[in-house]
Image 1 (spheres, rainbow, N blue to C red):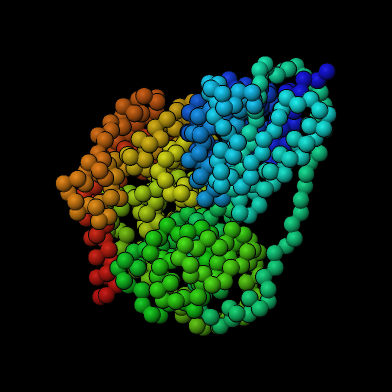
Image 2: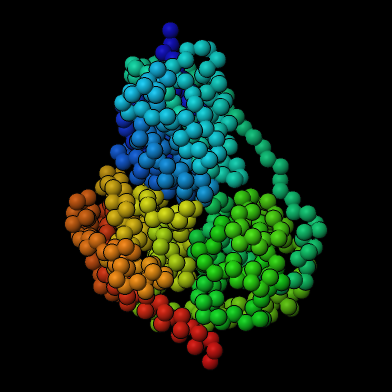
Amino acid sequence: MTDALTINTKYLLTALMRSGVRHFVVSPGSRNTPIALLLAQLAESEKIALFVDVDERSAAFFALGIAKVTLKPVVVLGTSGTAITEFTSAVAEASVSHIPLIVLSADRPQELQNNGAPQTISQTHLFSHFVKQDLELTLQDNHPDVPEYIAYEVQKLIYQAQIAPRGPIHINLPLRKPLMPDMSDNTPLRVKQLTRTTAPNIVPQKTLEALQNKKILLLCGPNESEDYSELLRSFSEKYHIPVIADVLSRVRYTHTITGIDQFIKADILTDDALPDIVIRFGATPVAGQLLGWLKKHEITTWYVGEDAGNDHSRHASHIVPIAVTNFLEQLTQIQNNSTAQSEFYTVWQTMNQKYQNQLIHNVGELSLIDAIDHFTHDAQSIFVSNSMPIRDMDNFFLGRHTHNIYANRGANGIDGVVSSAMGMAATSQEQRSLLLIGDIALFHDMNGLMMGKQYQLPLDIIVTNNNGGSIFSFLPQAQQQEYFDTLFGTPLGLDLSRIAMLYDLTYEKISTTQGLGDILRQSVVGTRIIEYSSNRQDNYEQHQDFTQMLREHFNE
């Protein structure tokens, strides 16, 4: 008689692979033994990547980083008890940023629930509304219908994770001892592939006609799905439509508008820069004042995309639930007023060029962004921490060489940043990736550095070390100097050279940005930490000085 645990687990794993899963991240434990062992065995013959991360919190963010880059479902497997709760932060981020993260959790059987058994908590619906759907499968049920049921239901769930709005799913797997599968089992599997087709998205003709003879501005927010960069670039240049490209849109290059938040702060946008219609793609922009500016000036805003609609400003008046590529391809049908649109395009491009010319005056952490912009390679991937790094990147990074910029901008937390960047690096080992992070965010996820050591991941980690949380210097609580450093500045006095030594990583230190290019050009194996020393108060003043300089330059 075929062992039910073995055959059902194989059906589970095969169904995942048939659904496009190619990356698995495992946090080992006793209860998930059969899944981990059979997965390792499959990895020897199947074209899948298997990573082991002993820290569950890091593992989930590592898987999240892979999924962000590949745009494919990625599995993270954990054992029973509080180990699974460590996945929660990454699951929450996947939920808000629409990432198909697949959680497999081993669990204790029903006879051990709610009676004091160790390593046992209620794992049913553990992630609540953070997951699109959850399912519990009994892998030790030997009924003949069970393998087919598992294969069908798992494929259904993976499909659900990938349709708009995309998001994580959870499969809970109660298991009782004995937990060892039959590693010599060769029973043939008959997993029927579940395929689906979708109808093409069509933009109503009336919608297209409403754009005729209008001054159009495109706003590209963080991109959570398809790559439309080349299509957008040719479309913008051909039809003279300016594009405000968020640094996470993956469409930013030197001709798209950079620094819109600075434009608004410096109050340099004149009436001739006001569009008739803004067409918005992607998630909420990093630029904190942009949506408020659209609302203040009552600019008609259309929100386009398969996940369109989440607008906390409550200003978007027209939702078009269609893939951006399909929308752009059909937008060529409009007969626009080319003269008015060309003049409007010139207004924005002139402002953009004047703004970019001012970046040469940047110093300190601001100049670090320009150095990264210059020294990265074409198509190189960059992960950016939340807090100050992502805001500076949005304001000052022009996209001279790469627009492959990623961040955890769903829930906007600083936890798991190192691990997510490691996941990103694991997807493109033919060239080095880069992480820009502050000292506090690095401290939050130091365990993520272990994956760099274990797998020799080609990642350069640039740490702006200003000994604390510099973003709070820009907030009202900075005026409460008596309590500020204790409660908000939170200096930790980290010695980054010792942190690098702990994880056997290469370490470099720079005090100016001029030396960054030389370091990045050096040949190195594995992960490297590059420390850039800074000062929080100096950083605050340099930001204020830039905004004032911008205001004066545009008012000359």
